[in-house]
Structures are given as structure tokens and as C-alpha cells.
Image 1 (tube, rainbow, N blue to C red):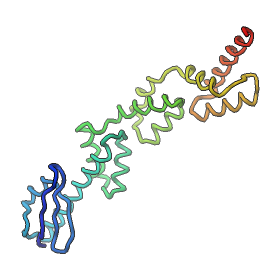
Image 2 (image 1 turned 45 degrees about the vertical axis):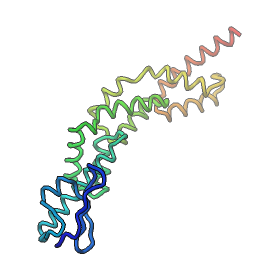
Image 3 (image 1 turned 180 degrees about the vertical axis):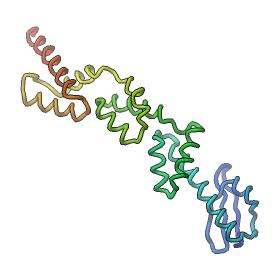
Length: 209
């Protein structure tokens, strides 16, 4: 197979473009171009062409890995799942995830801590946060350490109740507020304690008025 054209990138670090006599185009890293000693007008037999295509695809997956992780946090499990949808084999996905961890693009421990902070800041309780850790494929070995940083749920519940509950002696309001807090990931016992504390404070304020 003849190489009709081999064009260097306009920007350093971008892929080279190789055009075969059939019109098929391959995007290649500079390393692949050097490894295969490619040049315009050169010939590739079928085994060499198949090897070149495999190398081109591996390079494209690496570039996709960098693109996925640039400016965005995700778990190794999420990355592997996305790479599989791009045509990577399970082995390629594993190797790329390990490579991303080695160069610091991927860190499940840091991602777990960031998720916990994010969802607590949004007013969610531990059960909702655990659901997110599971959904985002964070390894369980990092859960406990990340969850230790959670603040006292009582303070969160008090703030949320202050925004939702006007009269803690009204059963309908109490049930509505309780259901909302449980949906946000707080336990029934945490919610019950929070409502009881909120009710006592509210009653004291009424007496003071």
C-alpha cells in the first residue's frame, strides 16, 4: 500500500496526517511516524499496514484519554467505561487508566474527596453522597476516608429546615420537610432529631416573642 501523502501538524504535539493511495486517512503521533520510518511515497505491506492502524488507534485512544481528563475529574472506572464506548478493548482501557494515574491525570482518592465536598456543599446527606460515589464508580477503598470529612449533619439539617419549615407543629409541614430531607440522603433518625431540635428552638422563640 502506497503512502500518497504524509503531512506534519500545524501545531507541535498535534498528530501527523497520513493519506493512503485508497484515500484513507490516518492520524499518527510523531513517535509512530518515527517508529515506522514513514515517508511520502513509501510502501506498506499488509502486516505493516495493520500494525500501523493499530498504533494509530492506540494513539487516538491516548489523545481521547487526555481530552476526557483535561479540566474534568472522573474515576478510573468512569474513564474505562468511556474508552470502551470509543472502541477500546478492556485491556487497552485498563492500560490507559493506569497510564493516566501514573502521570497524575487520574486520582480516585482525590476524586472521592472532591465528590464528598461537592455534594455536601449542595446540601446532601451521607446516603445520597454514597449513591454518587457508587454511581461514579469510585472504588470503595476510598469512601471511608472521604466521608470522614463530612461536617455534622445536624448543622446541614438545621439550615435546610429553616428554609423549608415555617411551623414545626404542623404535621403536614413536618412530613413534607422530612420527606424532602430523606430524599436528600439524610437518615430518618437524623431528620427526626433535627426536627425536634428545630421545634424546641422555634417554641422558645415564640415564648420570647
